[in-house]
Length: 354
Image (cartoon, rainbow, N blue to C red; front, side):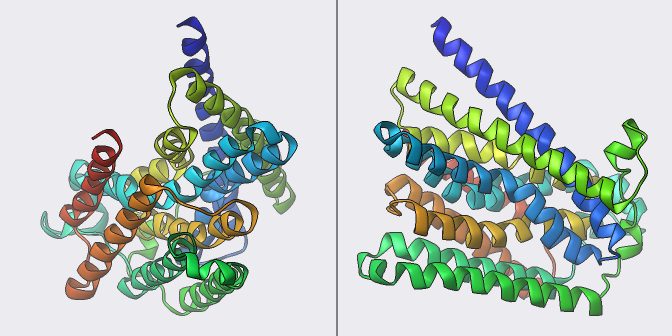
């Protein structure tokens, strides 16, 4: 019992460490976007998304590296890697959307002031519908391709081609996001101009220069890697102690932990009326995760998904389809749709325990 408690507390500590390192990294990324004079659409969907998506990308990479060093426990570590890869987009498509919808409800009065809107209009996100649909389409195509390799044995012979196609799709996504963000400025861009001060400038009194931003980025990155490595080892230990599959534990715990930055940022940005950053951070991270981590999974792990992993992936795709249909039909996203997407997480829990 004492051993279980020790590892549970250590996992909690590592999760806090990952969250802290992510905040340091994300703060640097947001300042980098401002320093380079990039539009918020690009900063939210690319810079902030990639920054906050690093934990769920580095975690499987670290797990795969440890698997190569310890062949006896390679299967467990590969399970942790696959759980993090598949579970991360699902958490964003469900829990992160739920928190965004809840934030709209909780901060409705603040949002009315930010947008000078009626109570009814404040219940909807103020985002560029073309930009949102582009993110959702890229995610659906990329994630479906990555999952299909594991779901259909006939595609295994084309696995490497599909993996590199995922990279090509993400490069295309970066190009389209950059060109469109420079040409289209959201109507609420002026409400989203505040960028938090760089931590090293605020607390270490270092000059607010590009070199300082890059230094803080490096510090955050090293912190993420360090805490991710210890987190993986603790998950493996606790799963063996309580008799739960590392894959199941990874699907439940790892994505919740690694997606904390997106969830926290989404809540804060929405409360401040920064809807372009709030939703772009989530959908941009979804596209990144569907491309880069899936590429890693296909090329570096036995890319075979068990039943729970496939359910997780299908629910993520289902939530994305709901969002796409809503924005296509009404040209806006309301809190009810976001809460509905979040409810799919309950279906996932039921599939695990019943």
